[in-house]
Image (cartoon, rainbow, N blue to C red; front, side):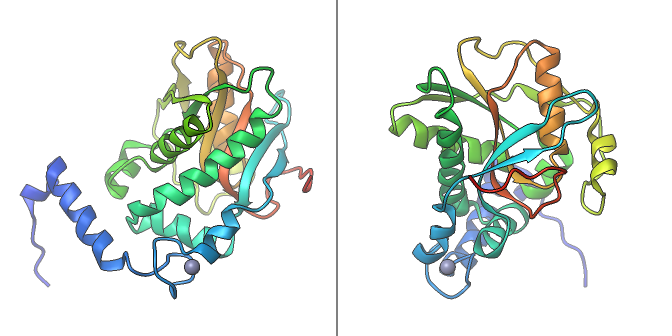
Length: 246
Ligand SMILES: [Zn+2]
């Protein structure tokens, strides 16, 4: 089949149009069960309202173990929704998934000395991933999470303080050790994180913990010690150490 190019669709307005068309084609079927109407139906949304899980991830080198607050297991309707959001352009899922992320952050804030303020630092995407996926998914989730937290009276903001400083291999197919090596030294942080803010690093999915560990390393290198880490979903035990459900 002949390949056509649509240069007018490479603009911001064009991408927005494509997004809208894609969304329209699938928007009447739940991404979780593909049976009921809505972006994520009420039944499938229940999986994002279960008890937040606290998972201990083994440290890297000299660093201490990391506790990650996860809204749901990466399974069933939540997994389907995250795949549809990231890989298939279902941007309407940012709302239920971002609200789910806010639940994990709220759970983490219960341990904060001042739970009324939080700065969410999203895991940085590579420029290739942003182009391929037509946006920055984790930052979008962080935006929805901060809006949700603000409605609950928390002074919440997104601070994209960590960025990639070199290309890294796609993590899929790598084991934990390979992921840690792949991530090591791949990020850097800005020093302008508000000093009084509870800094929380956020990502969509916890797999090996390598991304979050590298974010924490980059932040600590500029003197920022995050309160913790939060994700929408965590894969089954592949993280080194599991604390189990609380
Ligand atoms: Zn459903």
